[in-house]
Image (cartoon, rainbow, N blue to C red; front, side):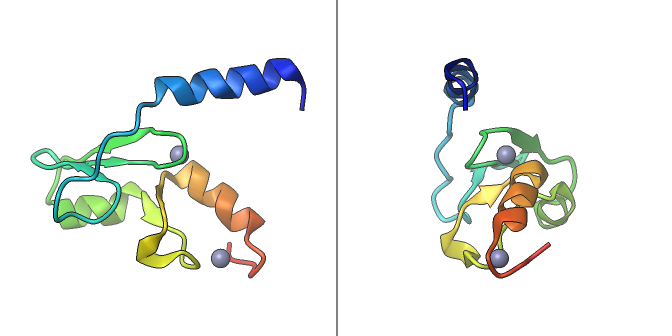
Length: 91
Ligand SMILES: [Zn+2]
Ligand SMILES: [Zn+2]
């Protein structure tokens, strides 16, 4: 990896501020009414427009099955990257 690329990645992470999970909510739920989910890798957020339970499913912001609920909530892009690298071959 070149130094310039490393710098770009670092700057991207700086912008994506990680918000705290709401008390009593599942990891990565950072807003309620409207519900907001946050990717713990890249920091991108998803704001719900329906009932929270429906939004959580439809958002694609999920946990990788190998990590379970102790893992990180990730956006579809980051989740795909983790699955692609998973030694157990999830896809
Ligand atoms: Zn992400
Ligand atoms: Zn896996």
